[in-house]
Amino acid sequence: MFTRTKQGRLEGEYNIYLKDGPIPTVYLARRIPKALKDKLQDELDRMERDGIIENVTKPTELLNSIVMNEKKNGTIRLCIDPVDLNRCIKPPYHPIPTLEDATAKLHGAKVFNKMDARSGY
Image (cartoon, rainbow, N blue to C red; front, side, top):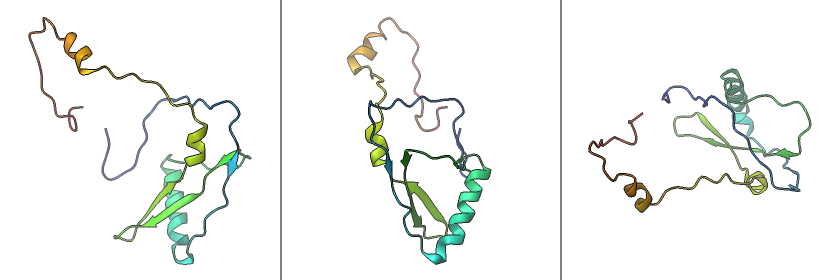
């Protein structure tokens, strides 16, 4: 499912529902040290080329700035801080069955399997 050498994305569409009356939030770009600007541009170019991000040229009401950290190996890690965006999103509701609900469905079953959750796909 995932490769260790290249980032990816899951195919398909996902609907994000916003709460009524979200407050538009735009943060100014955080300062990037001059010594890291080339690394940042290279990483953004790579992520755009690999289809991870898209260049947005239209005005937008919600904008988060980049948080960048340099790793021990000299590469950089890019993140965003979407606190205000997360406050505007209606969380999806996916009820998880209780242990009692799950075991009740096993009544009469004769064959069971034990799978590794990490590598069981």
